[in-house]
Image 1 (spheres, rainbow, N blue to C red):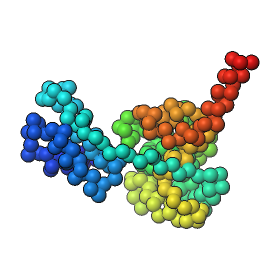
Image 2: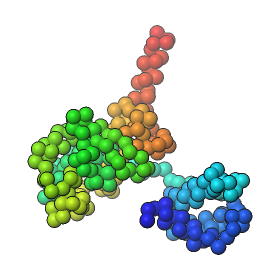
Image 3: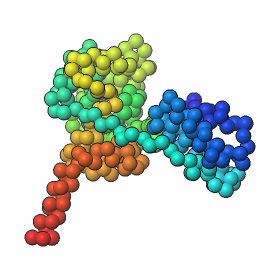
Image 4: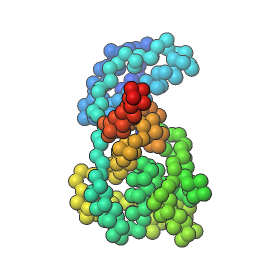
Length: 263
């Protein structure tokens, strides 16, 4: 069962005995308060969004309700997204540690994460059928938001994958596979942890490689819309956390415009 299914099951356990007429904003607010105990605000918002979507379908498609009662229920405020990215020295230390790792694919995996912003799940489930070296891209069929997207494969990352393609195993279609069971994706938690320790990095998770890629894009002049497209976000809200990193680029754009019109 996926995350949304579990969320809806929780609501069912709380409201399954009620008729639609009995599920008012006040009732939902009381259940929301119960939901907040022991859960992070972001988690509560996801639970509320799942039920809100169900109500929207009931209103628009089934015409069981005139309005979505969840619209009137206040959602907890989510904290600003965490942004931890590697500075130049940290990046060098981490890549050196990955090269020295006993896990032969760890270096390539980390380079892919840094150069594309792909999630760990997306990288570890890659198959050779997803890789197009001629066009220089990777097609992701299974993503967090459920939509297929193409990710550019360029530079050093493309070189590493091209080298892998020349000596790939024929008994698995996975790029990164378990040595014991080639049909199963590689589990990198242990070698990743050792590399983090060897690189002497504090408070750094694998997902922060994605933040690092986005941060580098912002600092190199990418717009928030471009960052959102590369990372696969549907809205700009998810990439607003990188806005301050692109201020220098924005300043240059404004300076150039002012020079032209007030010359």
